[in-house]
Length: 114
Image (cartoon, rainbow, N blue to C red):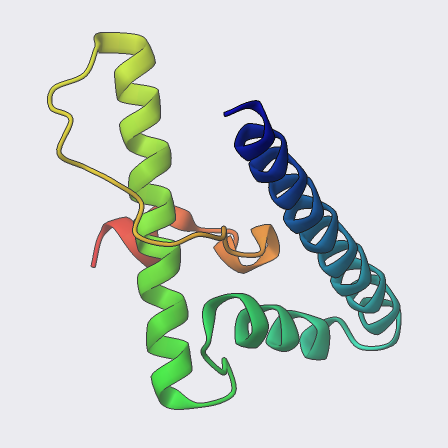
C-alpha cells in the first residue's frame, strides 16, 4: 500500500512540476509580449486561458460576460464579509480572472446598470 501511495505522490509531483513549468513559460511570453503590445498580450491571454478572441464580436461578448460575472463575484464576497452569506448558490464559472485593466473606469455604468 505504501508503494501505491508513493507512486501517486510521485505522479502528482511530476504533474505539478509540468504545470509550473508551463505556467512560467506562459508568463514569460506574456510579459515579453506585453512590453511590445499590451493589446496583443491580452488577446493571447484570453485565447489561451479562456478560449475566446477579444478581436471578434463573439469574443467581446464573452469578455463582457466574464467581466460581469467577476464583478458579481466581488460583490458577493463583499456582501459575505459585511453582512454574511445570503446564499451559497453563486459560483464563478471560469478558471481565470479577467485582466484588471479590462474592468474599465466606470464599473457601475459599464456592467452593473445594464
